[in-house]
Length: 232
Image (cartoon, rainbow, N blue to C red; front, side):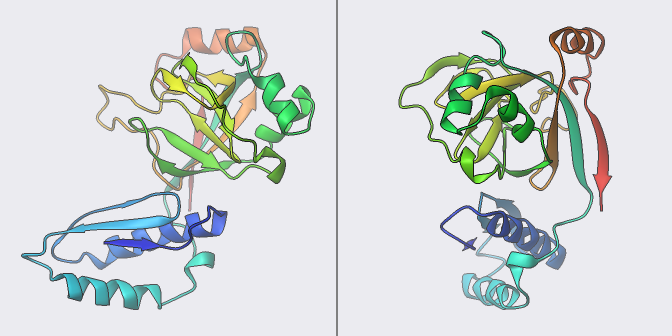
């Protein structure tokens, strides 16, 4: 069963989906097997032999009416990551200049804007553990490319439609690569393969090339030199 808060992505609608999912989890309904979120929706999987559809629909409808979800507090125990990142360069951020022109700023100001504040992990998707981060300022409502970049590396920082995607796998994409980091969002052999959860936050911290190389040489944890704190 799907509960959608908007057909247009906004920070409020995304926050509503995250808060609503947490509230459904807190109900601990017998027969609900899984919950998840997309950018603006919460999805509830259930066993109809245990929980009747109409009973679930009634419970979720009552929960929807319980409060203003667009202003609801986000779930606790979220994590904010500060990630050292390298922007620009023929290999590490080859489309920074192009993306900056589309956003009507200089490359230097583009980096400042992309790193100015923590960005929420709005959802995970497309590839294992891959975060969609937002929202960026309105001037970053730039389109995706009409063609594909043949492949971006793990850790590629890409931008379009007021969002950043931090690539968890190496893959073709229509998003413009503006930078790179050593943070691995998907860690196949780890006890918790997905390093991020929807609602977590990421703030990119620009560093120079030598500092970036030094960090990657000494940090083999998958964090790429990132630090983190728990958000209440």
